[in-house]
Image (cartoon, rainbow, N blue to C red; front, top):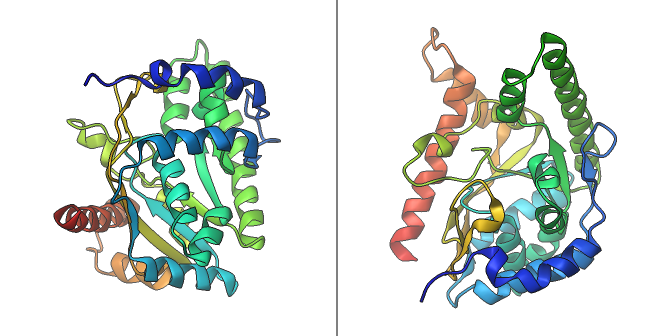
Length: 296
């Protein structure tokens, strides 16, 4: 059977979705924290439930429980997760909430995802889907470099750099507030969805090292199975692909000793230890992914 795109299969939902949207269409330093919109979340849950096949599950439940208990005890929690499609976060939260485990269900409610500005500014429908989940919006490095390079003048480039700094400083303050509220920050360390044949899209961003310095514990989450297949840059052209999805959690890692021990293992003349650090994290995620693939 030929697969349909998001806009083909769910066109009937888009009008209602857009009418329920409340999120800002433009991001600045005053609106980087965006609370989930439960009205649009209902539609995202329909999409996930429609396409999640039997056998989909949370793997390593005990590790998620340990992480939850640490957060409840007052420790700050970070989730670093693989990224294959725009349904990764919706699927993850849906499976946590339908796991039959009270701790996992409450963990889902505490998640605040770090998201790029594109999700708010790309289109009203994409924005409506994205606002189904609580987010801290950032100005991604890739976008900043691209926009600065395409600026028509030096003044325009400087203005864009200033805008990026103001937004990202506000984002860091928002994340500090999230930690104080016992919320968990979820980050996709690759910064973009993985595209087969383009290994650069699976490489971790060096700035993720700063997150390891800011949090007490990190939970690494691998993903096997995706409900969407990327076609191009237009997110609504993604093909809907029902799948068995498995989200596996590594045993929680205490960030400071983990980071210090790995950095100490590098040669003294290592040119970019921050990149090496996140490369190591991505290797751990890939190893976990491959192990789950064998038993999926």
